[in-house]
Length: 185
Image (cartoon, rainbow, N blue to C red; front, side, top):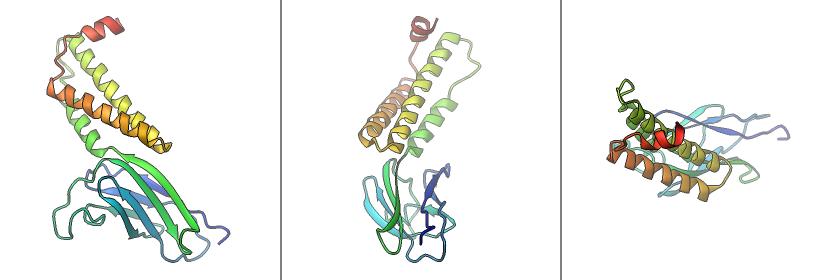
């Protein structure tokens, strides 16, 4: 197995109910017992078979969050620890730490789509855009931190983005353009 190189890619599915993981490994020959292990935020560890050279889709049912036959639910946002291994177990493996932000992104997209881009009050509209850009940077910061195994930082940035977004939605901006006028003019 000298040419064995394991690698996985977490691929966006643009669906809060699915998690997609593609096999990007190179195999010199047939492998046995390909397994993916995940720590799902709030639900613990799960170990599942993994289809090599394929795109694997995981749902609340396959991850053991809901029972088979029950309706699928949104997978939790948060930091996922993923380990892909083949036999002999724990000698050949790859690990990834990612943060799932699909539910937060869905909420962000909804807030963004509520903006009236053609509104006459330019200062208010610019302030809303500044606020949403700030929230977006916090989301991207959370992703970057998780990709670099800075889990505590990732969780803080995610929580801050979520608080800011909730406040933005709750107050329907509630701004008068003053922040934009004072800081960007």
